View 1 (cartoon, rainbow, N blue to C red):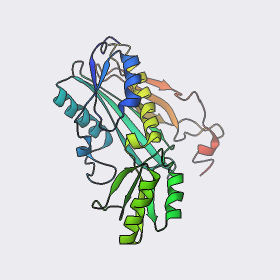
View 2 (tube, rainbow, N blue to C red; view 1 turned 180 degrees about the vertical axis):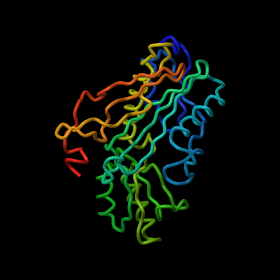
View 3 (cartoon, one colour; view 1 turned 45 degrees about the vertical axis):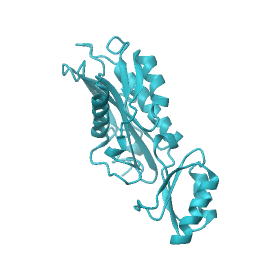
Length: 280
């Protein structure tokens, strides 16, 4: 794409996210990716509690880009930020929400995309025996996925992160168990220790690429994407409006042009199972 062809694209990460982001971005944009070596993104928040994230995910991703741009005196950067917790539609399972943001000062562009997946091993809990620990480790996909051990969920003095070696896991557990009786084990959600999360970051990057390719039909600015959804898709049985999306609103960040797309999911009616009247 002409806006990005031949430019340096800084990837603001310290957790090896460039492994999935760089190939996709270089192929689609024609830019040359550079990793922001020495950038301390942990200063904006960590999953293990050493530093609480003070801002929402989008603001945090933007700060990563801006800090990297300042370090390298460049005008094009990309960053991602993840959040973990109950799925917004199914509180009984955990979800990984990844946002990827492209910031282009030269062309005054800010384009973002989000991917949400229940394919995550996010978990944690106390164990007081080696069999319990090994059961947790198996469910967490250890050793391909890293683990964290410490005295308690919020303790920062005894924490050991990035454990992928079975012998280290057993030794560290035995050391902590002798001192405290039980040990808190949790999944290490940093991207380089979590292939499941890395895959979702890749999915979000693919969505970002597609959004960048989408251009405003009025001013041709990249990033013409969905800004909101309008509920009201009618129920197939009773015809009343449901909470499902009837239309998506697209808006250009440059000229403000708006376009409403009806039936974005190729459905003109919703299943009665999702109707508050037919299935209260």
